[in-house]
Length: 344
Ligand code: TYM
Image 1 (tube, rainbow, N blue to C red):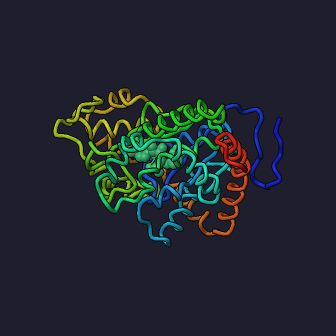
Image 2: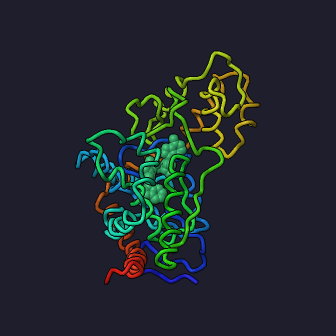
Image 3: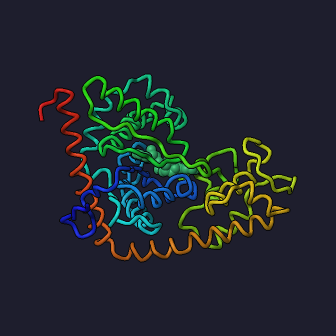
């Protein structure tokens, strides 16, 4: 049974779907191929079988300094990009985190559930902010807000790349702790981490994760890169002197080739080992991979330009999504507050 929404583009809740998916991405820079193959591709696929909530996590982005103008631009570009890759607002709810105040509110309740020790053990915090006096407090408490994002929607599955696994485990621990202490309030979410593509590496330094916040653009493929730029970056990708194509995950000597084969595999759905067997040298592998990437990325780029030509409609669509999300989030927040003894 489908209950129709009062909104033009969104349905309220599809009663036939028991899987509820939620995931988020920061509008901190242009998304990379790592974001796409580790997470966004599955956001699109999950729409066929789940009730999906996808959020642009601007509150997470301001845990480090952002220029206000650039942040706005990145947020709208990211919304257009998500629509361009196939997020369909007739089937999913796409929204902006800061437009739903329940996220910050449940975030506080989660900060009052998590411990200092747990937050101190988060590897992303250790890498990005530990030991510096200028690190923002919100970077430290970031995983509590991420737990709130997930738990507000009674999420069952969270598609993410490998770097978010520890945050997901913490969100699960917090849900269980809260339920045990205050009574059943939250679903305990499962991570969905892809077998191939969960950790796409930098093309110039294949021992380092490809990251949208990385300053060296040559190691990243951005989802908005032109065909020329993609081909150039793949051609220049670091490999090794052996010139033998085989898949040997975990071998640092083959990290560059492993990464290219992983990208190819994640993109096509083929096993990287099978792909390796088709090539006798790096040149042909790189040519074919570059072509496959260009075929995927070209239509995305032109669709983004089209969508950004009408920001009024884009912002209206996001507001609809935020209102739809808030209808669910406010119920969970009320239950959580009451469970803790806060009078609502
Ligand atoms: P963010 O914005 O850093 O990344 C978005 C998604 O992309 C994945 N990813 C990668 N996957 C494979 N290889 C890579 N090199 C790579 N780089 C990034 C990330 O794992 C992520 O799935 N904290 C989150 C955002 C967030 C969130 C949430 C996610 C906030 N609330 C609730 C899920 C649920 C982050 O900073 O993602």
